[in-house]
Image (cartoon, rainbow, N blue to C red; front, side, top):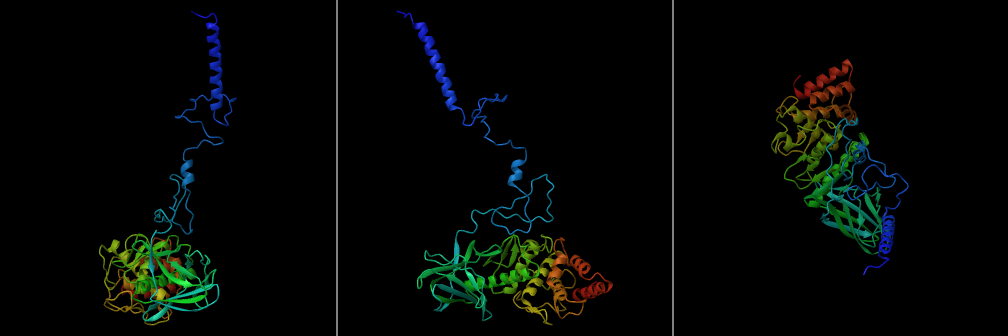
Length: 445
């Protein structure tokens, strides 16, 4: 039987249901949404069309690219973060693009390769201090390394900012508990270079007692001695360059791989077979400086393997002029690091064994003639720099030679000579002196 109030009940139930739906809608409305605003002509917010976030201006086309890829800053030491490039289509210009650094998952390789001294001399020192001296043998003579940064891995460790004791070429750590034993190490890696073996950073390691002084000694033929000889060479290069031209150009870290199967430079890595052949090490580092400093165009002749097509080339033979220029510059760079400009018979002894010594001041007559000879290119630069040659108006500093060449995409020594002459000897007398020096070194016009 139908109730007399069934119609009213249904109406009342409908009103209650409608009210609940409205309250539910208001309760589920997005927070911060102003319901008094006029509805947008676009579609209502859904999963496919979410509402815009509060105070977020609409992005214009290209905004995201510009924020993620600002133009690179010049002369800034790079980290392991990927280098960012200018936005395509902008007016940003780069005079000479650098090879981009590959992003790395961590600042350094995860694993270390420990090198330990063959001998450790120790004596009682200052309470709360650890002083460390490091030396390796070169030609039977002890050679000091004073730029390693030692740290302690122990909980009761040392200060994180070691101080250099320049008077005795030692590193100093401050320790908390006298006579406590600490694990001390120094990684051979910094913002300018790192020395690696099979993708592992070399680390000097030993145990020290707080309140003692130490002298770590490495033999010449040991792996540690070879690694430290490499460190001495690149630190010598860094110090000399800082004094002459500054280090702003050194905006990429040089990787040094030891031991390698042959000596060569390629793709930002210096490969070394023997660290104690320090002039050969300096030559390969010279290739890296050649590229970083823009001394010549990066391409033909920068690395032995990639340029010649074989693993061996000989200094007394002729190559292409492009290869001879880059190889000759690298040999001059090694000479600049290790030879005395006042020596009338300056020569290299460890850069090559086949015709050692390599006489830079006086090139033997049987060496290939002309500007396609690495040996003669190196001699030409050396004669501009050394103190004994009388074939030019005056000796020219490394800085003057460097400033004449960098940034000009030089390919051959002919182009280099023209730039140096225009920069340093623009007079008639100067041009005559340069022409005479060219003929004497290359035995050609």
